Length: 283
Ligand code: SF4
Picture 1 (tube, rainbow, N blue to C red):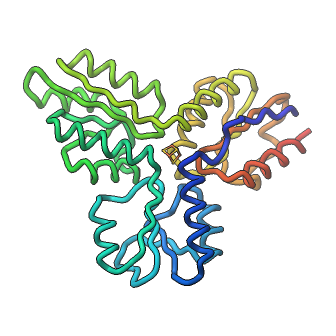
Picture 2 (cartoon, rainbow, N blue to C red):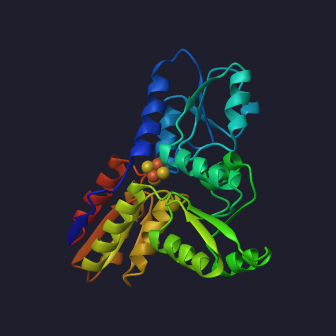
């Protein structure tokens, strides 16, 4: 079986940066190192960090001293860093600059009095961090009916600001912007999808058109990996979202001559390599 591997599969700029910061902090050995929530959405990387002594905690109350790393998706509000410092902790901010950008634009729109829509998943840590930093009433959704119902609550001449979760598909984001243009008098848009996401999504779509099945590698809790799998499914081929090579079943590839492989932005190279090697053994 021929295996086509996406050039841009795996760690993006923001994840590379966060993981490097965490391993460097762990090397010091002088202080205990913690991450507030998982550093990135990949259980295998979080496991390796834990082996190096980087402990995941869910709240500052669990840490008494040492270093706290703020994860790539950002933290619930600016107050978290203030509270950590006032406890005497050393704060390393690994928030991805693209997430910081989304936080800033959300705050700007709230401060300018726009009704703000963020296209994304309202339960995702990144959207929660954007809401916490913007400090206003923002609708986070991917649902058109919900947007219409929400906008209908407000009087005419609606001024709406639209941003996106960094890992959203461009298609969904532009569909929401088009809807707002139909319903509102003024629409201010900041495209906060990060380039790594767009690059991976465009490439995944292109490969999915040229193969008979796709394997998408990454955390089951990773939004960008899940979006990659959804994009590939739109090409009408079987798509397998796996975390490790151990999940691969030879029976998936009966009668398949060409399969594609891509991976989310939080998937490390070593896992992609194991997956590709396993696929190359399939007859
Ligand atoms: S996917 Fe984009 S926003 Fe998320 S960590 Fe990577 S570069 Fe940053």
